[in-house]
Length: 374
Image 1 (cartoon, rainbow, N blue to C red):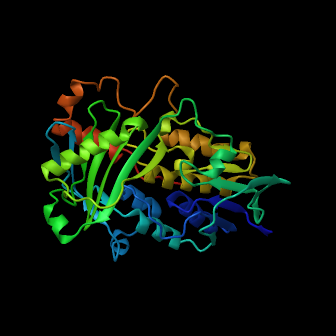
Image 2 (spheres, rainbow, N blue to C red):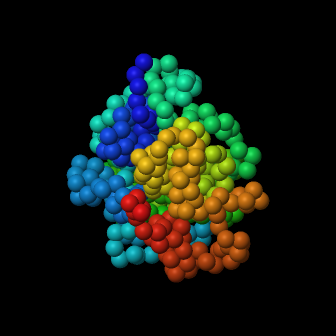
Image 3 (cartoon, rainbow, N blue to C red):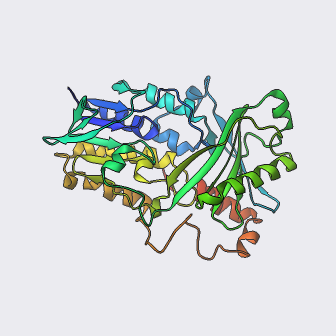
């Protein structure tokens, strides 16, 4: 049986970031993922300059041979109303394809990798975690997304107060004919809020690729909302009339309403496995990266891997992202006053859609890049 200091389950952005930080500190790390890389990962997919800074990624270098769509504007509206377009006057984010981005991050990691390897068993033996009866380590990190097997190991079933957001989306490379018919612009992602404010849809062009999707808290009506939105966008000419393939579904937890634990003796959860998606937007890449960097620092400084020694990780998560909300609250974390009909009026406002929706809720420009040295 092979022994490691840390085993990470999940090779996405959170797992790859943690593995790179730990191997840089001299830890023997094994990273396991059920998929081979590069793998298909449908995602609206944008990263802010803060994410690139935290990952020490040079945009020019990354964009050589990969999709990196500069974003300078946003087009925002409420379904059934005209959209408002705001020009930020500079690049405020970048569109990426997750199949490329995740593979790039994993490619920077030189530790042992077991890809195309499902986790079939997790057991405890003499203070170590044993995975698939083949690999063992005193510390196990769950980075495998919403359905991470390590999260299940912590006793987490569907939490009774957890708000699970369900989303469906499709990403495809447009033909020249489709590209000419598509009025959506690459530097201007479109966000369309459902009239009941329980979700939003998007149209995001990234070079020759187009991503269309919708996420809501009520899964049972997701398909109805999506089909209506897609038809409206086709009629308006925002997207091509002939969309290929099926829309793929996925789920995630909103941070303020997830009640799964972050740690226990010898185990940590990071990224979507911990339920860290921003409550206002559902965006999960930045929280995944930052949680991995915070976990790496705590792991390096911990005298052992007991829950007491790992507790600073939970404290840093709360300090960075806030405390979890009370059980009475649910859904996207929109202010109580943002209800119909005032929401319809505000979504027509250039100031509100720019300063609140885009810069605060989606880009988090008020939050500086994470300084893990602090």
